[in-house]
Amino acid sequence: MADQQISFAVITGASSGIGFELARCCAEAGADIVIASDTAEIFEAADRLKPTGVKVEAVQADLSTISGVDELYARVRQFGRQPDALIANAGRGLGQGFLDEDFSDIRRVIDTNITGTIYFLHKFGRDLVQRGDGRILITGSIAGVIPGAFQAVYNGSKAFLDSFAYALRNEIKESGVTVTVLMPGPTDTDFFETAGLTDTKLGTEKKADPAKVAKEGFEAMLRGDGHEVTGFANKMQVMMARFAPDSMLAEQHRKIAEPGSARH
Ligand SMILES: NC(=O)c1ccc[n+]([C@@H]2O[C@H](COP(=O)([O-])OP(=O)(O)OC[C@H]3O[C@@H](n4cnc5c(N)ncnc54)[C@H](OP(=O)(O)O)[C@@H]3O)[C@@H](O)[C@H]2O)c1
Image: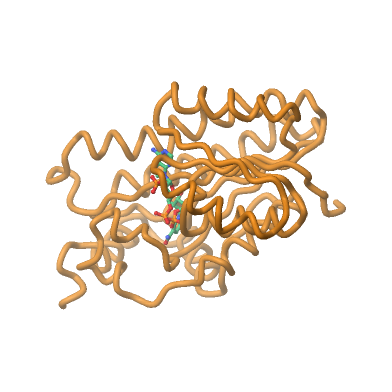
């Protein structure tokens, strides 16, 4: 399949990290962009992207809620053009043992990573498919293939997205719209601090550059690939996870994600 050119992209979770870099990839490819996130940091991100010369619109909305996604949809419609690329990247992690976490925090992970993401794709995806050509990129994770002891809800949410992406890809395969799932490994962003993972091995180990991760994901999206596992070590990890027993994978994850594991 030939690489698609894109002219107008919507990117969620673009105030920092991988999402910001994905927005930069779109802008540097000449696409106008609408970027969204939950905090006012999205406006600073927009200021940093404006020198690329494309139109940049920032929307502050809580995308873990139906009303937040509706607000984003309304703002994109004001552009007067339909997007030809949707990048569903907003997400958050959560460390600690499941029973030690506040349920409100657990709920926020599920509402952001799953409910908000699939509502975004449902709302915008119908228009894209009707349009008859375009690209969808979903930020999943290699966490989705590993039962994540001490990050159980997060890894479960990414297992949902990794699986959902391939199912949607298949359902709309005749539409001219492709679905790609980006599956990064540990990447150097605010994620670990937000998730409370700074005293874990996972939080303190060497991580990938978000710009490199985003570039690989963006290029895979343009090619219309099914998925992109970034980096050689992550590719090996995903391959091994397909054969290793789940109990072993959970035990390995415990060693890197258990609170205090950074000190052992
Ligand atoms: N870093 C990693 O190791 C890694 C590995 C695999 C996959 N991922 C995935 O990559 C994606 C981006 O994460 P990141 O690593 O780049 O971390 P990050 O820098 O913390 O970025 C997360 C982004 O999501 C936004 N967000 C979170 N909750 C939101 C909400 N309710 N409504 C709207 N926006 C919301 C944040 O915006 P605000 O701060 O403005 O709320 C921010 O822009 C996530 O889906 C994450 O699961 C990360």
